[in-house]
Image (cartoon, rainbow over all chains, first blue to last red; front, side):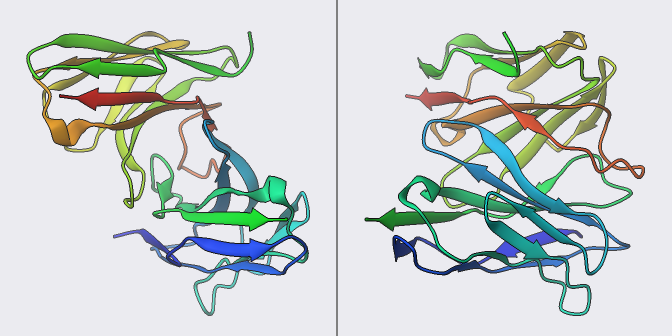
Length: 112
Length: 117
């Protein structure tokens, strides 16, 4: 079945550090891939997405590239801020699915 | 109001109680979802509604009973719950049901934090 695996957290960084959160997936066909973010006390919101191989999604300084050959969609940001502290979820939606399938989430904590 | 609104934000109930969670979306979307978020586990899809019709029941125990009276409102009726049902319950909506080539975005509410004593 379809599934998403994210690196275990928490990830603790200092402000302006480089961020990578790994995400790999298992799916039939050609899924669309997403990163959602959940700030404290809030619901999830879409951060970025990519719908086909080699697409790069980007938003608010975050980027992720859809790598079909490695079935990965790693999230990166060159310089994190304290305000980026949140839980990040990788997710996929395949053409036959009825809703998004999420990973367990990775907690990011950024200190000044 | 805009977006997806869930009430109550926090709920504490005993195992013999009956309560309901409410979700309302003001986005004009046609599909609505219930997800369960537990610590250190992936979000679990519970139910999917498309144009008020239930299209997915992800093997959810019958003590959870969804209701979708119209495309804007979704309820989750709770009865005789167990302590392991304590979690954050998230409602979401999308323009149309995901899949079938539609890779649209899900819009989430802030969740209802449920504690079962």
